Length: 98
Image (cartoon, rainbow, N blue to C red; front, side, top):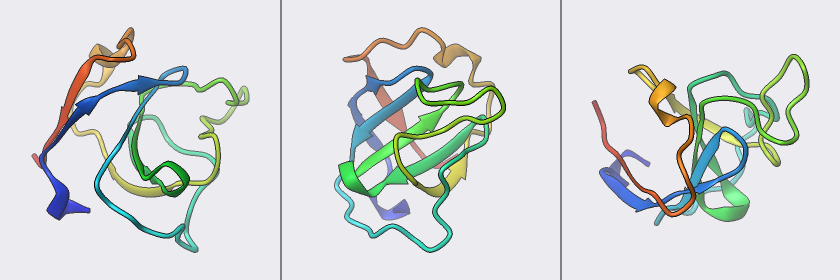
């Protein structure tokens, strides 16, 4: 996954999740999660997409942030992600290794 960095793409949003397709193909891992933590970065195999979770999604519960289906956790945001609030679909995003 790191070999694909830096990545730049047009964002799609789903609640407080940004996601976009990346040129990586990987299977769902045994450790895949159906609930994530605030700030998690994940790979979503069905869409070959990188997901950035900065809040609740439409299927979140009162106590959990939930992706559409299980994801492979690949990292965490290191900086303040509050600036991601209000990101619109179509916004260009860039992800690089810190």
